[in-house]
Length: 261
Image (cartoon, rainbow, N blue to C red; front, side, top):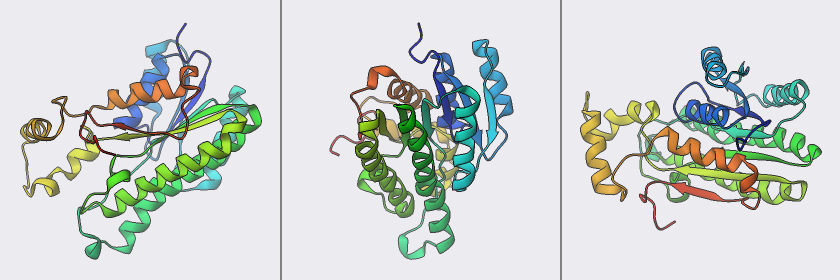
């Protein structure tokens, strides 16, 4: 028996990167997965169906729209008879600039997707899961939500908000059997990371492979960069019954890059 057999899971920001890897892992581990994004996820849902031999579903979702988020989760619970797992993964980065040069538009966009999007999901899923007597909510934060990083001030603040929301929701929803945890990845090989590499290195066309090898040698004790499948494996465990006593945690997944917080 697979650890998530019979579970109904929703993953936001599932079009690529951490979200796609998580959707694939949850499906492989037995869940029926609803993949959502502001981009088309129908191809992914079809791929999951081919992988598992059972249907999965794709839905458009802008996580900043609280009413639509709530309606979608209600629809999932009604259609499938349950909402067992919500993975709040949707997120955006920011231009690498000091706070004094960061625009209002950047602040509003990053906080809307990364923080308000998680709030919208936790609020809506929490109501459904509490009424049903249990569930799992997993929020994708970042180790930068614990320590902050110069030129990533708004992104860091948004992920700090995710951690705080996770802790509060865990305390409030625990008596109803709902666990809420955050995963705090370190530097991961994703398109989001690659898109910011020119600003990080100061080079127009940086050698991504060389940069990642050097970064891992200098900063990551296990000697490699993180991969989306690493996050997916932890999320799947947090979504399972085996994690029943884990709630309110903000778990570093950094290969040792963040050892002191």
